Every structure is written in C-alpha cells, then in structure tokens.
Length: 110
Length: 122
Image (cartoon, rainbow over all chains, first blue to last red; front, side, top):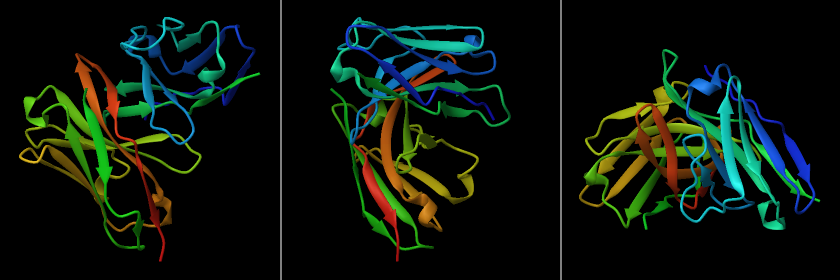
C-alpha cells in the first residue's frame, strides 16, 4: 500500500515560515491535500489539489508538490497555527485504491 | 454550509457491533457528486480511512477493515451509518464522518463531523 511520510514535529518562531513535508513514491503524480487539526477538534481542510485554498483559509497557507515530496508552507506563523497537520492522497495505483493519510506533523510555535 | 453530526453509543462491549450514524444538514446526500466517508483516529494517533458510500448505495471499504465493516445510507433521513462488527479494544477511537469532494482522480474531505469517541470495554 501507498505510504506517506511526514516529520513528527516542526518548531517555528512567530512570524517565521514553517515548511511541512510529505514524502511518497512519485507523489508529484498525485493530488495532495492538507488538514489542520487542533487538540480536541476535527481536522480542517487547509489546502486541496496541491495548492488551492478553501474559502476562509488565510493566504499564509500554501502548498506545492513535485517529485517525491509535497510541501505545506505556513508563512508569517501565528500562535493559532499550532496544531497537527496531515497530508492525504487518493491512491488509485494499487490493487486496492483508497484514501491515504500521512503520519502527521505537530507544529509548535515557539 | 454543510454540517455533519455523528451519533451513537460511546461505549461498546468487546465482540459486539459498533453502530454510528452521521446526520447531514445543509446539503442533500441524494444530490450526488460526493462520497460519504467514515474515518477514525486512535487516541494520540493519526487518521485512518474506514470506507465510503455513494448516494446510490455503492460502497468501498479499507481492505484492512473490509471483513468487519458495513456502511449504509438512508437518503430519506439524509443519514449514513457505520457498523463495525466483532470489536476489540483496538477499535477504541474517535470516529469521524466526512464528505469527500471528487475531481477526476483527486479526492479530498471538505466537511467533517465533530467526531465521537467510542470506547470498547467490558
């Protein structure tokens, strides 16, 4: 089955830029989506289709995808961005297509 | 604004069947174009997709859970449901229902329920 690997944690100072990677075999050929999950809350979609933002999501959130790595970038990080972030793809390449989530990255704002 | 709300028992005994219902408001399951999914999250862990149903009733399940999962839909009530049989402590998790948007080969979850914790214990 398809595996998505994320760093367990990323630390960033307020006002700086956080970059969260999502590694997968030839992930650049798939569409990647990103979710933010704060403690005790449901995940919220922050990026879909590699780089599109749903309405209401700040422009500070952006995404890119190429080769074997997709990246979620959070610019001008704020305290409210502290959360777990998950990447996700729809894997249709295997015998058993399905939704695959990354391992998750905890973003800590210093 | 589409909203989803899970409901069902918060405690299930081992070997019994876990049953949850997701009620959708602000949009109709019957309108088509979306896949209605169940996703779970073990305590302190990541997200695991369980399966989905289309308004027509067609389903698709995660192979790792397929033998124990049944998802059904009641379009008259604008609800879809999850049944997970023969549960063990390993099925203790927060269960989410979610709507999946589809665009070609790309699928993502645009609306989620708040989640409900189900504990498996005697």
